[in-house]
Length: 267
Ligand SMILES: C[S@@+](CC[C@H](N)C(=O)[O-])C[C@H]1O[C@@H](n2cnc3c(N)ncnc32)[C@H](O)[C@@H]1O
Image (tube, rainbow, N blue to C red):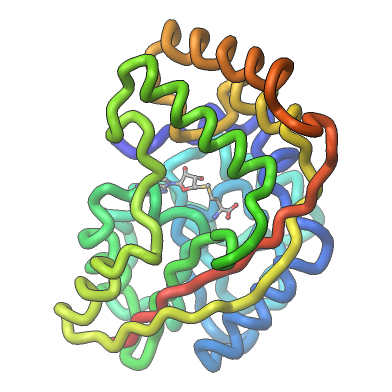
């Protein structure tokens, strides 16, 4: 069963939203990478609350979004009000209700690390692409050498605490990232050309260690949703204790530099 993002509707946009202009830069970079323009038909896998889709709307002639979470997609209505909405369908990325060769581009941002069955999702996207089309799998990651931000420091501490409470790597895992070469290897094994590309760098909205600890304690991270409640509560108490006793500058607001890194596949 896919990770349940219905859990996140109340805080997703406030905690994962981009600064002004970032998604428009992503759209331009995607067009440059694929050679697409406003006439392309585009499928967004895991469209979520439409944070990315809004840059493509309403200029694009055909923009289709799928997501497993209906509640996330309901947030799109508010964002794109005042005109026709993109076609939205609730679906698991493994099984998509579209005819073969329906799209020029399929793209997914911050989704594939949630897909334990990602090879099946790649196969399904391939089925839906027209000849010459491209699948673009994107994750937001910190660039190599970037200073560890509050996010990273709090994340490392949280992982230590969970290990100390007996949670194994499965419970701590942060999913499959693009840097995992197995994804490109799989794509190549299906006969496609696969290339990893850094699309653009951007700055996240500033956060402090305290804000990250509060989000962690409030269960705002998908990697924590499968933890038993008692473990989550004990870990949150330990993290808050660390913040008060040991964390340097818990209230300093820091901007993290991030990267949209893509793997592009063409069959
Ligand atoms: C971190 S959110 C990203 C949303 C959006 N792409 C963005 O960048 O804001 C991950 C999204 O992937 C969706 N998702 C996870 N597993 C899925 C699956 N197997 N099939 C379809 N959607 C899935 C979740 O419901 C969620 O909306």
